[in-house]
Image 1: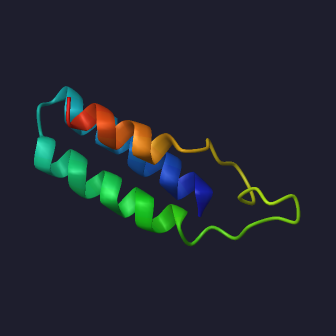
Image 2: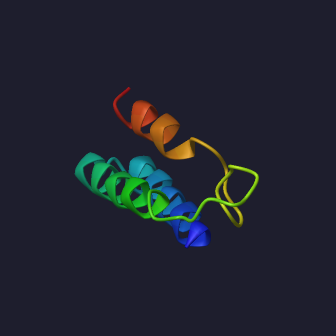
Length: 64
């Protein structure tokens, strides 16, 4: 599931390069919802490959 989040953020970046803002926001929303379903490991961090708060950072960039 965490790889899906990374792919969604990558797709959002590609859409942004093409000037497709509504697609960017839709993809980032989906990434954020998916990230919320990633299980938390015993360490307190999300399990699996995860890049931290990338979704929020990408959303802020999309609004710039």
